[in-house]
Image 1 (cartoon, rainbow, N blue to C red):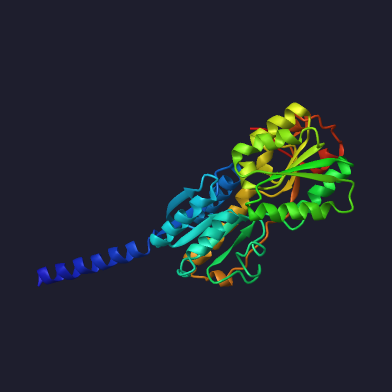
Image 2 (image 1 turned 135 degrees about the vertical axis):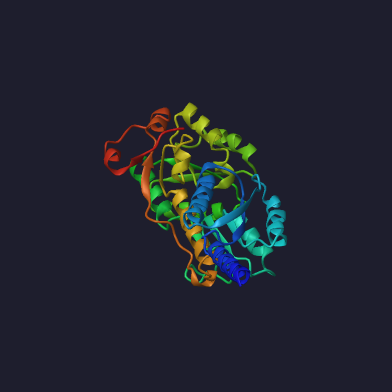
Length: 326
């Protein structure tokens, strides 16, 4: 009888222990494939924000991070590998990475995709509409609808009658969208624009140098190829006293002068929160509208302004947030 009672007690303890293990909060370990076109501060910050959101939600995650090293041809095998590994979710950090992931999952729509650092999700074909993202994709864009207009307005107001040099990779659809928006925003202003295109980061310095005698100011949009080699443009801008306006605040830390931009950590974290809704709460991407970034802000690097011969305007002391070259 005593032995029977002991067995009952042991069985009860086993049940309690197993139940405790099942409710400890550790849960499943999710496998996430994370891809981006190239490694540079803005994209890296977005990835950090994404990871922070999942960590704060208490999810156990195994990340498989892959960079295409600036070569779009590398994205297909990366995305195909995620599908072959049957990951639980793909985090696509940049327009090329997101387009590749969407193509790779055309026969695997059960793998959700969350993107960020995408300029125009609709124009690029990632989603049909921001409020109706798609069967297996949603995310956060990195271009505030008013960012380019405000930047062009800033240049026209404080650097009137300038010829502005634009350098970008025409193979990046996000960049083409932005350059078209710059040209449109410039209509009716005192500004003129001169373009140079590059195919890879090794061509950026030559493109910047070729513009020296033709432009009064550089404006570098969030082109992944050019931003990954921004130091080349900064060197030319500093040497020739040409103000360098950029597309996002992280580029100020590399030596850009001014931008109307957003915080990439913030949009990455919001994308991570969407991933939590999918993995933890069981939501479908169709139920999570794609989003624009929050409000933009004028950021200025005072050291870069001095290096590039910018005459300081006292109004900026009250209207701008300040960053330093790292």
